[in-house]
Image 1 (spheres, helix red, strand yellow):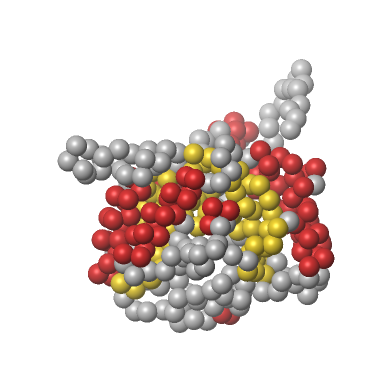
Image 2 (cartoon, one colour):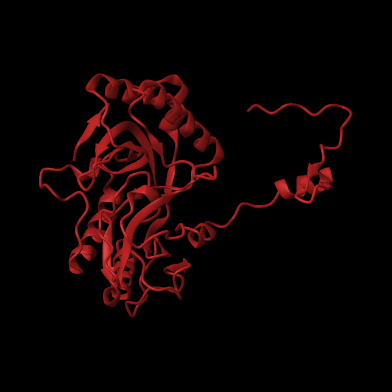
Length: 313
């Protein structure tokens, strides 16, 4: 694989003042107590994010103008379902801010003719989840998609892999073998082992199921590839690859004191997500099989918007 290496809180005053009023959409103002209540709302459950994991499809044909010049890796085939297997990560607000700062520093180093698109924020300014891929982009015929998910769920649940954490260990460039894009990535590793044995177990099982359904494998295009060091989180992409000197300057940013906190981040891996069309299924780790060989109740949860929709690609 073509990877190139390399609050403080303030004390309250004696005289407490009511927080400034918040303006409602209708022009009226909400009380400070109401604003505080809204701010104190508990975070959304993790499964909520799966409900809105896909954007609205704008076209069934390959129209790069709708996607910043990108082209489909898999051409649209009526009746097929685009599929992706991955680990999802929702950075905390503090992590998101530091990632945005890192991307901004990268943009300062890059030549002006190289445009870096980031994966951190949507067009509307909302933070986006990031992911560690466990499959290439797949395309499943309708007749295979349910059997594929069932086989994958069984394989992940019987892997004996417990939930674990990984951490970023370096910044790198990755030239996609399937497109003209080059990705800016954060490599990840298991803190205790460094060689990613848990991710390798999950990748092997995902690749095995993909192969059973005549789908391509990830990180196995060349037998000499070191797949255990290939796992990463993509944070940006560009069509151009910077020259060697500029590339190295970018990669050294990860070692700047400002970004040392990233080295200690713990990215939780509680399970594998399978996105088939617009339906996202979470397959948790650490499950055990029942005596009859079937998964225990709650072994996977299917949440999405595509249940009543026609197949998407």
